[in-house]
Length: 334
Ligand code: SF4
Image (tube, rainbow, N blue to C red; front, side):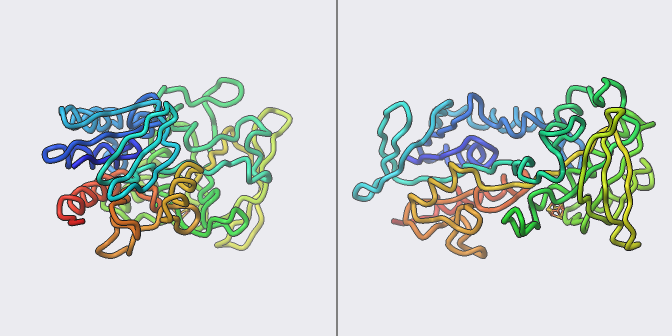
């Protein structure tokens, strides 16, 4: 069988490696390199292992003559022709496959849409993606290129938010904030760190322990509250206006960096592709046939789905889901 996989993130790579012993696999990736989402990270939760090491291990798994990886290639169209699927790429190629796995991943919520939080308007207001880069490069600095005295995190930016149109929880940003806050304290023990949250959803193995350690070992302060507005101050710091929802009191505080924990969304590419295939689900994500035992199947025979193109998912769950997609194909009869 010839199988096409769209997306070379952890889902696409793991599914390819699991299928390559029996089938020919072609992976299409629009970025220059596979696994760029993992490579952009410094450390992984909950064990603070190196993200780059994981990316290298995953990439090594597709060093197989049955796997072809096409990078910097965008899939423009997928069409059914008889019992095959024809994939048309932006390099004017038209290739036929028996099965297709959609593993296109997610995109990050555009924080500019939350104008009241000042992202893109005031300096010192950054996203969790930008902070991750600073952590990785050991360059956590404020607007004056100094070590920040106070850093504030705000959870649920673009998730669980009717105004953004995203009512769902992005699932990974609570634990990511705790991980990043610990990393800040490891690099700069003197920096005060505050996390403003609606609820803390520390659902995975080892996550609750990280939360405990964040408070007891690293002295990170958790504030149950919402930030309604952020702006800059005359001395190039960031002022936030918030409400402590436990005490029911308004509060104002200044900090050097405000980190917006941006949620996971369906990319335009995923939404368009899924619409074309007739497998579009809620919020533009891909829709599986059923979330229980048919979560890698779709209503379109021969089209399968894996990973966070379906819904927000952490890397470990994504990898497991990709293996599940591969098993589904290995047991599939046309
Ligand atoms: S994981 Fe946490 S921060 Fe992210 S949307 Fe859910 S509750 Fe909000």
